[in-house]
Image 1 (cartoon, rainbow, N blue to C red):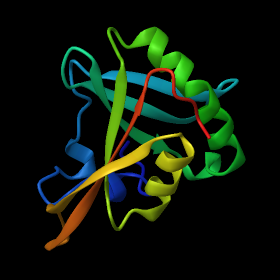
Image 2: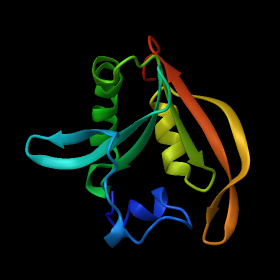
Image 3: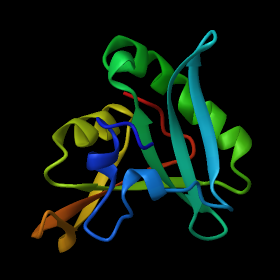
Image 4: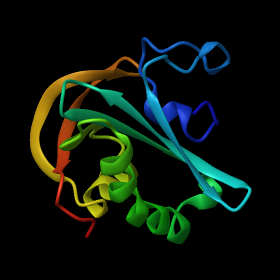
Length: 139
């Protein structure tokens, strides 16, 4: 998560420097691998009894075909491993177009916008709200 090509995309103005970031207890992490090669991870945060929030952290070497192959496996893994999960949501700052495209390709639907709710480099950004419910599939 602290990789130089990932951390700037997932951190805001209140985030610690990458050297001081720590994994959070209570989060669920799904490591993305190809054999012994680590390609990235998905981090899940339980929001309530049925909703989990996802954060995608795919290393540059895995972006493109490998990331989309892993993405096809994600819904089955999530529904099987996230206790009580019926909906997965994410929040994407509007400046992070690659993350938005990836979420849409994952089958997530845009359900709203939280205006001026993300502070990055002293600038306020809208946050796009997306989600997918159990039974829906990747596109």
